[in-house]
Length: 139
Image (cartoon, rainbow, N blue to C red):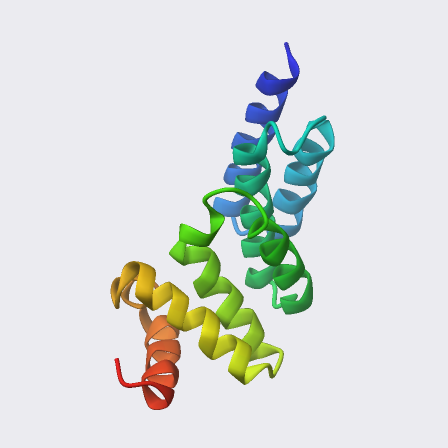
């Protein structure tokens, strides 16, 4: 089995753990996958996916600082700035950490990329952040 097959296997295992709400287990497996990547610039798509998945998992267990670190790192990779979900999660983390202006900026980026749908996809929590954003900016 080559490295890319091993990375793919770890990604699938991490997804299974995430789906079972074993977020710490998913993070550990995805970190193993990240550790196998020799050149993050060459395999940026895999690194981007892993960083976002790890950040999402940290968010799910209320580790907002760790989530934010992983998500902000992900934004350094190609195409990440066009990903509304990343900006949405960054905005949520910033809000939870008390960084209201940064939260507003990130949530606005998410809104500009995906419209209200990005908020609707997250139901009650999404409504909270949509209401927050619309209280600051006319949408």
